[in-house]
Length: 395
Image 1: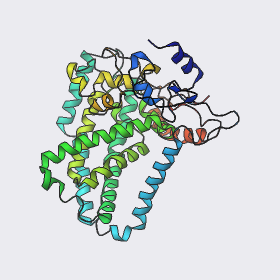
Image 2: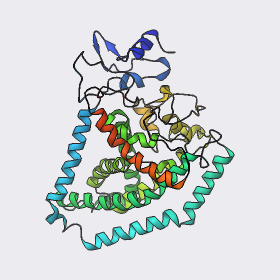
Image 3: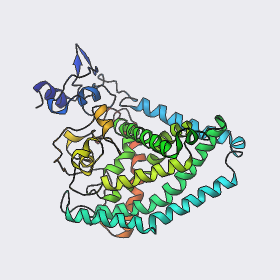
Image 4: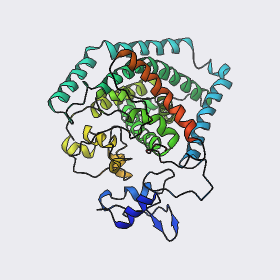
């Protein structure tokens, strides 16, 4: 039950955690909404939180409010990586040799084959499609919806963009790391063994993915790109592929660099990415299941549907990718009874949502959805728009 003061604060668009006269104070353990645990008491202290935000002073809009400072820092850091690669190219050539490029091309080729021609992949598709048909979370959704047709376009481009460009980008980052720290990546498997290395990298990558996922919701500049993924109103296994290319590059950088610095090989990282992608196919499926007791450890189709929910009560919860323990540790888990299967999508009339399954229209709409975040960034960069909430479209 939400208290009267919390309802008043929410309707006024101000912070709901208050100590004295200063809004947006983090008070550990203090309950803002009794049915949401400590989540809101922690999140309302964050810049750009949709659950609580200090109103700008009259006549003084904060151009870099709502997490734009953090966005600026990350953009500058990413630019520094690109500049470092360009400025150190002569040194990098010694670490990025033709053999490595050839090996990467071979890995990419096998990835394409595993995606489009491997019978095991299509067996997984068939199993998930059958489960969606027999146990639908919501009838009329899934792989037979027009939204799934748009996801097929994303799936095809996923192979071209992600499996090719992102993996070549991994090679560049690995070459930069090797140039900066000679010998990196040579010893981790010798110390932990292959199984130990895979376990460490898998858990660490999942935590980093949780962190980047959280940032993509909290920072408005990142949300514009992540909104593409959340636009799906008919969750299905291929919704995993509905991702903006820039978002994939940022997430790859944040997740790959720390793991590479630990000394994980490209083979281990590629395997971790593959396992993560296949599990994400399952969690995005239109299947009515919360996995019973396993939901306390793993993200499920039910809990991830809550994350995609149109209901404001579910917004900014359940950020986990594989393991749900991070949400439980950081109090971002939605504590329902596991039976909620809400409608999904974004409440944004400006978003170019697909309306027809005609191939030409789907291809054009893919382009519109790729351009939309850039246009939204330009729109919200104005002082009048900078104070908007990440999940609320500007008026």
